[in-house]
Length: 393
Length: 225
Image 1 (cartoon, rainbow over the protein chains, first blue to last red):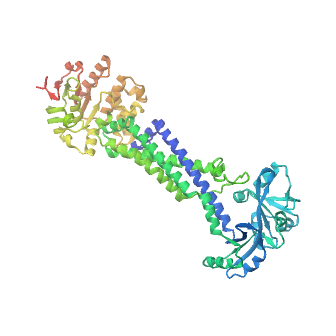
Image 2 (cartoon, rainbow over the protein chains, first blue to last red; image 1 turned 120 degrees about the vertical axis):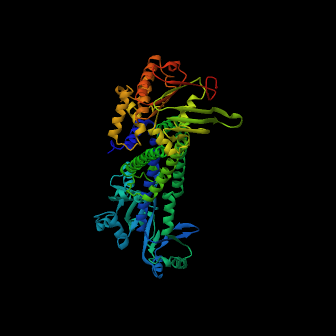
């Protein structure tokens, strides 16, 4: 078919024979598209992972503060909170950062109550096939991949000794390692029985670090917040939506991404404009003049340039996005992921879950393709409308 | 037949106004070979480009094969250049990145013919211009004479009634110039109307019937008389 259609034949001929002319601009385009697409893929994937995790979190978390400083929360608050109309699934928690001074690193220690149905279920969903009874009986812990790697690096193979506030060492066995798919949030996490966590943090029997609960009716949220402040004036309430916003600010980088997109699109435009104008006023200008002189109309010239540009735009976009997909979801986005997880505590091998926002990709395509087409077609048209004799000069 | 009536061509305006052609009137009969001779800047190439509809006259009219080419809209002017005339340029004006055959097929790409038909016509044209043996060679690697023959093949590929040559031997040695004259003679004998703009003395006494028209200062006549 290609060999029978003169126009397609000539189009492919020009693209192939003048490949050096197109390769430069195409390479730059592919790199830019790949870079922006990779950023979008990473961002989408991280956001999706975070969203999935946050969906499982409680609507509210309360802690006690003294003079603006968080301190241990009285367990008795749980009984008062559960009495508030509309509140459900109240769960006292013990969690906090354990600082490992010799290496200036910290782990997130989470204490789980064996008798707390919600906590046990969450743990079972995290570690498939776990024998909860044995786990709670053994004074052991489940650690994130980052913790496991860190401990091994420092010669703690199967156990780790926590230093309690009383100066004693508490040896805890590593029972299991959390799956790598949870690394985004659980890389530096240590899950242990609540009693053990209480001992490590030096908390009393009637103290916890915070209390979580749900309010299924969104409309009641503001009322519940009002009533919570009657429980104790030293209460600090953290809503899930606030956490979501904080994560959004951390990973979405909305403004930053769009700024990058804008700058790249602008750079592309400038670069293409420069390249095209430079060519149109020399070699390409003459070529258009020759085509016009041998009988090509303005419409024929623009048709040729349109299809030529379409092939370049489409191929560089497809190559760029496929390369970005492979880089992010197959190779795990080396280097670039550090920009997103730069503030992470332990070295984190995050597994990117494939998540593509086609709307954003579409916007990226438009931002890239429209200036590209304009930068080619407008100068070509300007040359095509002048007398061929002048264009060939 | 080509009829040129009171044609003028001006470039620039005000103090920069330059009259390249001043009230030219000329008729070229069908099958005739006309040589427009004159020194550089006499207006012969400008007149040729107006006949080829590569530019428009500032005044007057040009009729070629019954078509008023001086006022053709773009689509019609393109069709006129594609079907009625074949132009051979001084600097050949070939697409350097393409081969001889690929350059020759360019005027037929939008003709509505399919590729086998186009290839056949290109082959015949290259045969006539004695360049068929270099069909697959890139134009950039050809000698001046070979480029000239490639340009001739391209001008002939659509079998035009009128062939216009602008300084065709300016970049050729004597041997290639004589070879070109030989080709032109054959085309003229085949009934083509030929107009050649040149200052090469070789064209003053061609070995076949031709009419020499002297141009100077944008006018016809030995000293613009």
